[in-house]
Amino acid sequence: MAPPLSADKLVEALKAEGVKVVGHPGWRDNNRNHKGAWGPVNGTMIHHTGPYSTEAGILEYCFDGSTPLPGPLATGVIGKTGTVYLIGNGRANHAGGGDARVLAAVTEEDYGAAPPAPRYGQGDADAVDGNSHFYGWECVNSGSGNESWPKAQYVAMVKAQAAICRAHGWGAKSVIAHREWSNQKIDPRGIDMAGFRADVAACLAKPAGKWTGSVTPPPLTVEQRLARLEAKVFG
Ligand SMILES: [Zn+2]
Image (cartoon, rainbow, N blue to C red; front, side):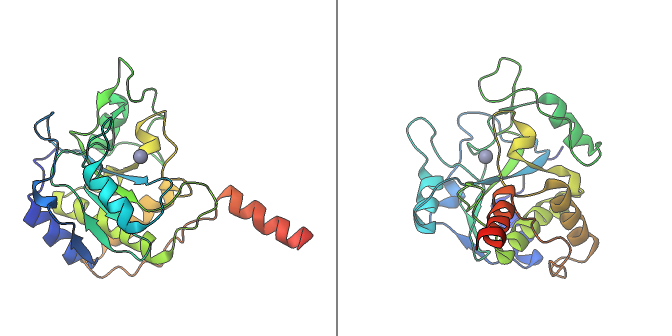
């Protein structure tokens, strides 16, 4: 539990970790703090964006949102080449409703390979508001199951999460997937979270900026493995 990082501290932490940071125009004043609490913060959450046409388009969408889901939709967007685009500074519409049991496990960093499976999601009477408790990172990927996670993007995802954890004095168990928060979500598809957290832990074990990202390559998705098998058999 902690007060959220200021915009300057957030930039400083990300840069110290060695990621390329680009502030989307207006990001410092873009938040939903007028609609609900921002903080105390207890963790940081990764997502996939879902279908998209261009990276520039997804930045605009995550900044503005839509009528039913106003922006910002993330703290930042992490692009295919590993650039971290800052989108919002404060409460963002990304986590939605989730499970208090997960929030407790993350806050205490008290769980094994994964937090307890979430029982609730957005709109459920027993769900708790994740937007006040988690930083949110939309990682550009269609979520189709066939789209790979380039190493540069994966490394930036790990480093961005490590930056938040290091700045707050948290460990890797403060990092969760959206699907670990809400029982209505599958994202980020293709990212094994136990391996991802192991990489965040490896990054945190080194001084900021020294981790090179060689521990756990993102695993192939089931669909990618099937495609390979098909190519082997029929190709
Ligand atoms: Zn999500």
